[in-house]
Length: 431
Image (cartoon, rainbow, N blue to C red; front, side, top):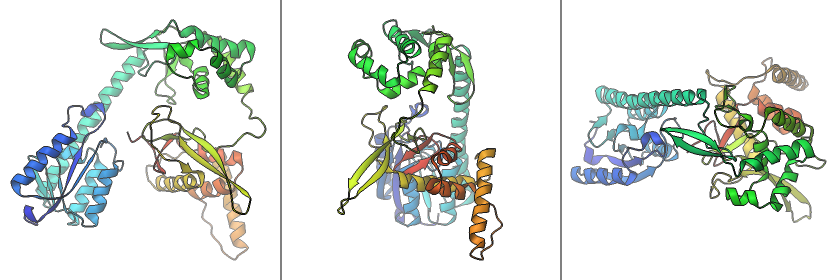
């Protein structure tokens, strides 16, 4: 070792994933207790204790772990104590960050309950093997889960909570869905009111306000967003797509509430009534983002602030709708801040070799027009650039200067929905 263990400044790190694949892992308090006892026994110097409940499957998503890497770079400590290697990493990215810190002699020692790893080839190699083994177990487990889900879908059972009008139940070890005979008639009535009486979503909401029976049966208020999602849910006539947006459709084994012709008629009614009313608010990122922690949709709000001069200024914000977790503490984010973060995010993924950014012919045509516009503007200043603009440059220009249609087209080019946490864009949920 480069140093005696007693001279190393350790950070004690404990992690417990909230996901089902780590239900058997030791609790955070158990990890802390055993490692503190080990440190006391061996005279190790713990200068910081950090803990978090977060999955380690995907690199760069654990806030506390990223904080540890940053503080090691700042030489706040140079050793890590953890119960086992898989508490530190179950992915190649985070493992690479640890090994890189060891190569640069910033991290001189990693100690687990039964093993030690310092900056020498054999011990680093063993660390990589153990963390890679944890990743392999995760990947294999994921494959088995996906195979099981696919088999369940092929049998006609959607592996999700039952929508309004149905009840989840278990039969012979298999989770299935049965009709909720008290609620189902109300669901059918919603479709009939739209198809036969030209009710809008808001009309249905008002109708439900006066009819308290559905709320009594379900035990919850039926918001406007749930009404529309119900009217667009193919599950009610007997088919479902899983995962959503995958294009993989299955014939359900459950009992339908409505016929397909009624569903199709309602969709046509919704399309014809979709035109926005005069004066309605335009939210650029409507349906584009979800909360990274609770998974609920982000919704837009506008606030008007009166300045000292007497003039009014309108600000657009987005926030978690809290439809999944009413106590979600995700903060508001200003639309301009969100635009800046989105541009930074697109710049990062566009520069990756394995970028899955797909640009359709319409967007490419608009990018070509913007290239010519930029060239003409620069030529007037005797500046000549022959390179085509990147999508990141085009997105930045469009979000600040484009029409509503151009902005929406540019945003919809991205793989949506994206996720937001602390004003930062992610491609996946964090919880």
